[in-house]
Each structure stands twice: as C-alpha cells, then as structure tokens.
Image 1: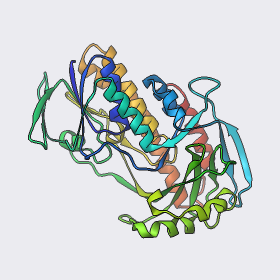
Image 2: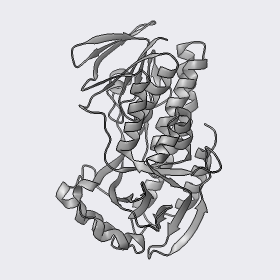
Image 3: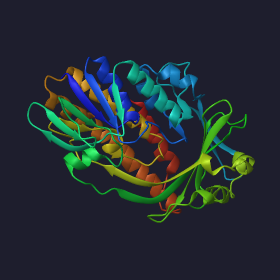
Image 4: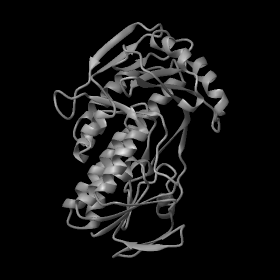
Length: 372
C-alpha cells in the first residue's frame, strides 16, 4: 500500500495519519470543516489513552500541556470524602495514571506532529462519491476533484460521511441524558479525578486540566431534541449543582461565562462487525460512539489508530489486515459503548434494583487497563 486517504481531522484521523506516515504511506487527510479544531472543553485521558499516546510519541508533550492525575476520589453529596485510590500508570511507575487537558490542545499537538511527518492536510473538503474495485478506491470530493487511493479510512466522527456512503445510514440510540462541560479555575485542593455520588438523577465530576484550570462535567436527563440556548447555560449549570457541597459549592459562583460551557446529549452507536468494505475502513466515532461515563472515547479512538497501523504493517494482504483490525477492536469498543449505556440508564433511573455504578466502573477500568 502506497497511498491512503483519511477522512476526518479528529483524534482518530490525526493519530492514524501519523502512524501510517511513519510506515512510508503517502497520506492525504481531509476535513469537512473550515478549520481542524475541537470544542474548547476539557478531556480526560485514561491509562489506555496515555499508552496509545506514548506509542504515538506525543505522551510527553501532552503531559507538559495538561495535568497529570495520580488519584481518583469519590465524594458524598455534602462534599465529604468517601474513597480515594491510586491510578496505576500504563507508561512507567513514576508517571501519572490519567491526564486532563484541553481538547484543542490535544488536537493541535496531533495535527502539528502529523503535518510535520508528511501528512497533507486539506480543510473544507469531504467525499461525495466513493467507488472501488479490487485494486483501488476512487474518491470524488465536494470541491469537484477526484483522486485514487489504495485505502480510505473513515475517521470522520459520529456523523460519518464515509460510513453513510459505504455502509449505509445507521440510526444512533438516544440515551435520554445530556452533559454540560464547564471550564473553571482550579482550586489548589483539586488534584485528583473527582466524582460525586449521584443526587437524584444528576451526576457531577471534576478533571484538572492545568495548574490553574479544570473542567466540571454535569449529566442529567433530557428529552430527545433538547438543546439549551447559550443564554441559559450559566443558570442551568448552577441550578444542577445546587444540591452538592464541597468543591461544587466552592466553584458555583465561578460559573459566569456561557462561552466556557459546552452542552451535548448522548447518542451512541456500534457498527456491526466487520468495520470495512473492500478497501474502505472506519475508525473512531464513525465505528463506535460511546457516552463519556468511562472517559474512554479518546482512548478507543487512539487505540484504533494503533491497531489499524499494526495490522497494516503485519498482515499479508489488505483484506486480512482490515479483518484483523476489526476483529481486535470490535469487542472492546462494543464493551465500552454498552457499559456507558448501562451507567447512563442507571443515572437517569435512580433506584434501579441492582445498580452498581462504582463496581461497574472499577471493573471496566481494570479491563481497559489490560492489553488490547
């Protein structure tokens, strides 16, 4: 394989571009938006993500621009500590087991490294036609151009154009829950990944992202189609955290700027096995989109890139490589989506018999910390 097209300038696409370029593949990356950028909210990188970033060679840079987290803490609603446990490191005993950082910073690091190592990047460009035979894929773009590739990687997110064109339209599952992510000043005492026990059907947590910043996440039930206006966001966030004490009460008045708040609702999807058709393969959120309950979305995207690159480097044929990649990734990513859906259901249906948030999360983290 000598030439590949990657559609999508998100985490999965940029990581895949970086790895394929290192294997000597000529990589074109196209992004439908005018700029390659991410929402200004924070992101939590669990151990599996850090392991993949280390493989990519950008772990140190990410840590330098983020906040290393070594402990996980849970609190009662009044702000008193319930439990604390250390987070094992996947990349060395002296390194943190989790890193918080801002999403735009992670994107910039990946984009700069991919471009520096040979990836050609074009924005405001997306495929409108994909045709393939046994030897190549011809892609027509919205710009009127067309090009021929050995491989097309659809890394273009939850609303994937590549998936629609090649796999057909698929209906996501609405989970009845939304999330507010709020960027805030970080009190000196917030150094761990911090979560509160659910009050009713509202769940909150905090991730440090820099020496002076953190982000708070707030989940709560919503109706399908609900989307608060920008002017509502400050009061909505303040109202949702009213029942909580401790750091939640401490920072409540710091919630002032609606531009520092991002809202989205949860829709999830797992594309059935296998994740390729001929010479076209999908990765990241195009193939599997979870809720954020396990903070594993970025980790799964990064692992996809590593697994795809390894399969392409070792399998005798392209078909065998894409089959091996799908076989390796589908069960793990399906587990993340289904576990997130379960946690979301329990949070929006308080009092469900047998609900065990902490037990399920602990077991999931242990599983995700293992080899993939």
